Length: 296
Image (tube, rainbow, N blue to C red; front, side, top):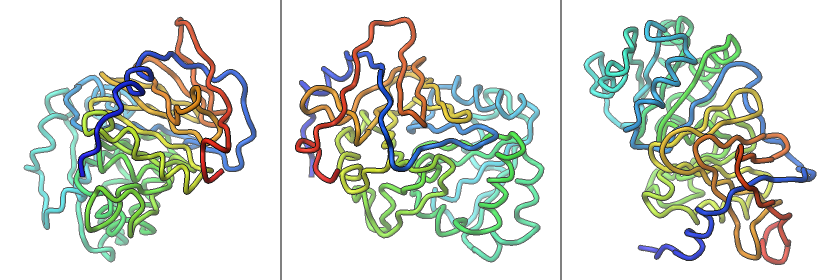
């Protein structure tokens, strides 16, 4: 069912610069990978600067990149996969497509060899539960962790972004409008987090609230299209063309602001959950009132 945008709240949030001034105690910390980087994109992928940033982190145009389009739902993908065009357009020369719907194949030495030789792995969109069905708790997942450990980069857009967090929103096999469905486990490269995408473009800015109410330990991150966070260690930077929403059970804006927005160039500390908008006036985000945020 269509839900109208709350224009007053949305407009107010777009205009509020944010800095969280005082850390609070958080029961479950959100952390990035100890080595390597994540590039997490909200969909559309029409901003080549995001792809170039990924390539730079992977080692440049000649770096070996593995693309895993399994979320798209096709039975087979080959080296003529159309999703490679955008990568070639930004100069990538060493691209390998890797795909299976068979968990036994995902556990095989032959299948994971390409990831072992890669410095970057990219996950395009589709439906995120398909990635979990094929790769969760397999040797493929193990090799993604190993790639990060040796300093590589893992990234994804739309349905390829959400599994990088620990809680898989929109993971129901029936429809992507169910926020907490029959698949709820992500890979957790970004621990204690729930990642949503297509945020403002698809009027989803209020959808993560129910997830954070039900799971108050999670940090909610909603990304609009053509917008990404680049996670290095326990911090991320916003890049791209639009906004990233932060849903934090312990902080809110005013009386009713259950999320706040970060713009390109803004940075965020995952451990302290402090956001900094460089060289701009700031307004602190207040600790949440338990009576206004059920589920605390």
